[in-house]
Image 1 (tube, rainbow, N blue to C red):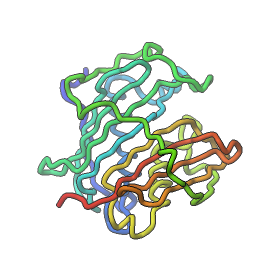
Image 2 (image 1 turned 120 degrees about the vertical axis):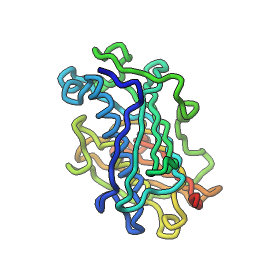
Image 3 (image 1 turned 30 degrees about the vertical axis):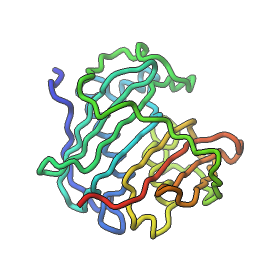
Image 4 (image 1 turned 135 degrees about the horizontal axis):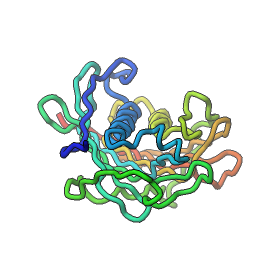
Length: 251
């Protein structure tokens, strides 16, 4: 039976979720967001295993996370999520992270696509043989805007990495939460100390195990750092683009 209220996941920030400042890493928050979405859909009878049996998977297109305050080590938090609606081939899902008092710690708007895993291409929502409950009247705003690095910015190569076993998921490519780590790894200690108050990532194409990525970043521009990943074998093939806005968190 479907719940009349959006799904809510309760959890405690563990040591594996925390960074050197004892704050929840952005990638850990994205991992819980992914888990909450999976459990929300599973409650409707749409499990990951059933999706794989149908040859289908989810691909994150864009995520836009506003962080009011990072959750802290051992803090109890609640993550609420819901499928908002479909727009064309895009599935829109929102999230709210709160502390025990109900104060918003973070809000996120995400856009997803349904993918045929064999043909590696996006398919229409009607290809999913399950019903997904939507909450069109419950919204954090407009769909997230696709991230595009401004053409006038000069990005410099920061790192080269090869996708390994630890970064891949059941869809056979680098999992979306790992990109948040790549972005934060591109920041200096001073930039990390300033705080990432907004994280925007657009995923343009997948990267699979043993493929190599060139990671580029900009200088701090208008309070933000832009990060881009390119496929090393095809230098012009962009894997992802991201914008990390820096600033002080709300007290």
